[in-house]
Image (tube, rainbow, N blue to C red; front, side):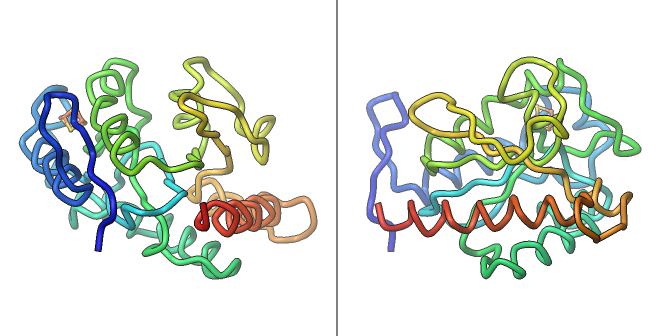
Length: 208
Ligand code: SF4
């Protein structure tokens, strides 16, 4: 049962569930950038609407494009594994991407594509109103900070953002798949540290 109503800015009020559904439908019909020409399915996002935590990746991959769901391929399995290791699960958070349609060959989305799509992500953030935005990888982090930044240098830090929210950068799960070591100081071990921090933040803010 949803507790809050959202003013979408045009004088009408919607429950979160209804407001998100409007965004989802608009994503499904969107042809605002060239990525719509090569997509099979747009991938709006999914998860809890009452969560304090939203995960934001770069863009859908092949399996996501096929199914219309975020993080369901190999990178998604890695994300699920990290969540499980710290006692979190997908249904406790919201998961989406900066761009909602797959860039061909999994290339990095262009600035123009991200700009064309960003209003969907901003609407999702406005509706869900999370306390923490987990930026998965440098593309998502650079999008939020509006400058090119290194995920290796920034990961694990809390960065103040708009509206009292914080950005928490960590590695993209696909980076962990390309760097398979798991020992001390490895990308996986650092990502696990980050995910433990995400769980702490979840526990802290879900009560607020
Ligand atoms: S990536 Fe975003 S802006 Fe481009 S067509 Fe898909 S939904 Fe529209």
